[in-house]
Length: 572
Ligand code: ARG
Image (tube, rainbow, N blue to C red; front, top):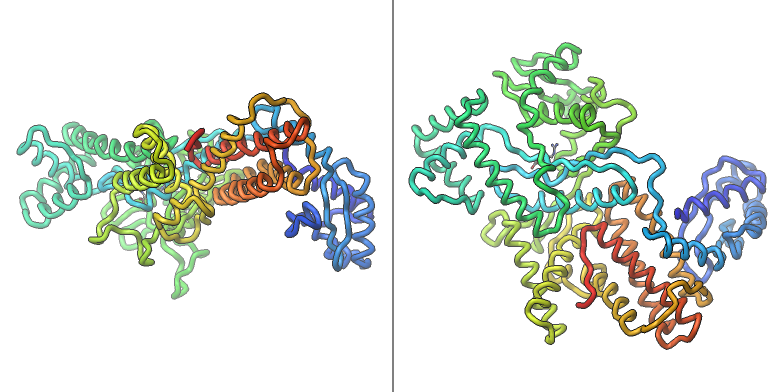
């Protein structure tokens, strides 16, 4: 049920009845619920255009709305606003639909798309860092929301599994394996550093490493097998993080850079043949007039290096063609650090010009800011190293378990561990997803683990609290009609019905924080309702009706949190 759509249609009719057509309808949730549920703000603009008195026009629209099945009252206020109150019967009917439809009444998209979403995408030579944590969490939530709306979602983990550094790493692996037969790669970061030291210090080792690069690129079976072994170990490190986070990303979603190797020369040749790429001191470059640097020179998108080597850009061009040509994408999403904004602008512009990216396919850069420490600098360990994500997540679970235990000392060890895990992981994810992804944010344990404010523990607890109401409720009529008399009952009803609109805007904009903000608002409103309107102490039909509201609130919170990738608990 799309509340906005229903309301907009009603309002449009009223505007037409008042002699105005085609003017944009500005509908906003009321700032003060004492005056209504929604406010129509579009009248003043329309009045100006049609040279009418805004209050008179507003009155005409309000009169036309008064007969609608959706509206209980429409009152003109101020210079020409209209305060709308929705009809309790209409609200009850829609809530009833949401309760009985099985999926909260969410309609599948009328034109389902194939959406290819590129997220996580760490570089396999090193340990995954916090930037990939953000990409993983944000991408996973967007994927869930799109699937819930009926789109076909194809996840692509564009891991960095190719490049000259792999020659060095494989050479070092061979050396280590020789020295230590049961060698295990437990820390990629350390391994990379140690390999680099050998590379810098020992010319013979450096030669072997370079030889391996050539062999790797030439498709030498033996070296390729070693490379595969390294990639597999590194991927298993990443998968460990995904599993701990409860992400939907699976090994079969991995489509690394190396997958496009055979197509890179084709792309470059094609761009040259089209006259888009030109020779610039031996390199092949696409000059893009639309992106000028400070000196006013066209930005250079280098697609092949001097000497023939390929780059990140060449791979992304081939990859984009694959996603459209083979995966049949209608929409491409790239969840990547905002610092890569220019790369993607150039990628999309070049692809449009080359005809790889047709008009009817949208390509969107879903950028995110940097995760900062409390000191306001990019998040690092105390010694200045990158933080190992497994350690970070283990710390989250450990902190949350201590917290949960202190709140509820009666919990058994297994219970405390389970709840601690759910709260700890939920807290890390929610702290990220509740912020506008475009901005930087400060990673702060105390904030994210607080049971007050816009946090995962607060929302998880709100859900659990409703579950405990139902444990105490005993028998009740699950088919009871909704009675919406109290102001807070109605406000909660209106809020519940916004869920689908919120999902749609989160899906369109790829902003999961819209959903997070909504869930927080819903939980807050529920707790105000719960204080003002007794549930279990109410009687008969009223008690049943309030239990219905509690039930739908719980289901909405659970579904919403699930779409953020956050689990709920029956007890906490
Ligand atoms: N591996 C890259 C990095 O860590 C991110 C890849 C994003 N996806 C892409 N198609 N370029 O910076």
